Image (cartoon, rainbow, N blue to C red; front, side, top):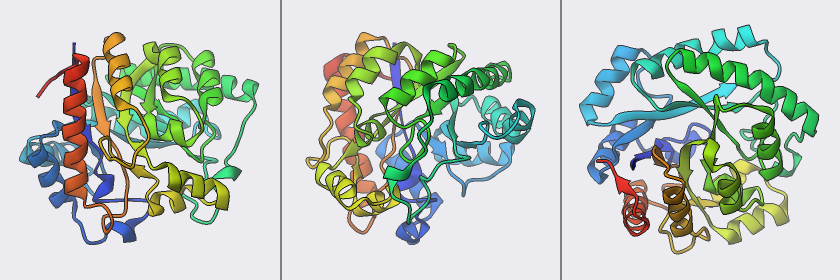
Length: 301
């Protein structure tokens, strides 16, 4: 079994806070990612939209497509409407052999609302989430039939945010729906990342590694700030940052124990004026390489 290391370009190109990264280009980010050694990148909004153009773009930098965000609206849309809305992305990702579409419900999310405290995120009841999960399973089956898995991203500010939400989503869905496991969002939500992995590791299809600076997270809660306030203040960082608080060695040990065979993607949006994207992305790469070696996880180059 082997893992591959990828990266999201949010450290260079933040779509939610574009002013933070206005001094950086996608081309520069791609060059940096490839130079560091990442085997893949998740799709960003500033990459070519057409499949042939995106394939040529990825080949130019020698990286694979290792996923990409999809803003879902299945809570309010019919299954047929949602299939039509995401069809182009699913077909494109299948053609480019991406491991998954990173799907998250955004119809009622406040994750992109700069002035809305994250404490006001939508919280649905168990029956509502389970009903949604059953509908989502049908979408995941359809996506798999097109050649690309659907991996659900629990996210701060969204209706599936904490361990309880994840429990309900997994209980109400079948194995066609994979779970995207994100260490940083779990810790931010007050969950135990290792406990979630222990319970739902058999459903994990994609992994995001990001660390959390606890003092910044404490400030977000104490001041009742928004998710984006936290991002701008530096709540997230890469594995290997001495200011982080997550035990990634324990996480990679657990991934090895469950025979995880997929992508580990660094996704750590920060203010580049405070955290140089190349330096921090290399720090994350080097640290993950070291801990995977200690865990016995083979990295496919």
